[in-house]
Image (cartoon, rainbow, N blue to C red; front, top):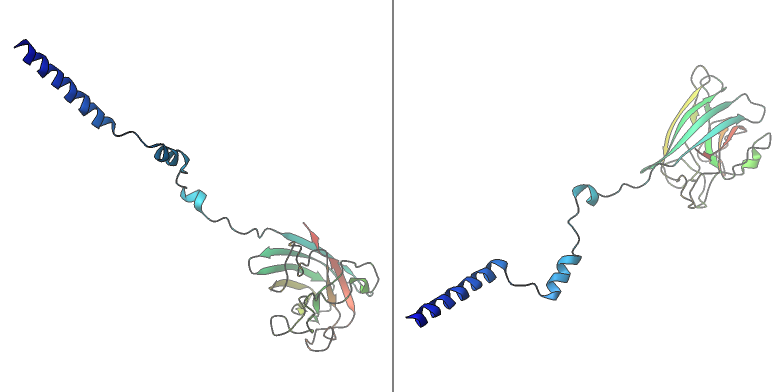
Length: 205
């Protein structure tokens, strides 16, 4: 009787030990443990979001008179995902007059006629033409027209240049020129736009 009771007690202990082992689960293999430890946490929506491209480059140009004119002005340049946006005002123009408007290759307005700014900005070596249509200089921009007070309000988006990238079409450090006559968009090499009556160097803000 005592032997039977002892055997039953041993069986009960073994059964309880087996249940405890099942509750704890099987131990991980070394490979599984390493995999669990090295797995990165799931990214939150904020950290997984794409970072937008930097379009924060900005610059300005102060237009000074040239060729004996009274023209002056201030322009701002902002890099966008579609090109460079130019805004500002040109003053001292004849009322209701129209004027050629271009980027030039050198940021030098030191000579009285602004010839120190060189020719049109043309890194791709194209013929002069209408901005946005066919072959053209990267520096070809739309004509600017003054109102009855001789003020032209500039609001131009050009897709042909960049700002502050250091690339071949980067206008930073170049010049912007206002001409005495309208650009005809066909005469080579500069549209027969006449004298340079204002010049400004494009300088980073």
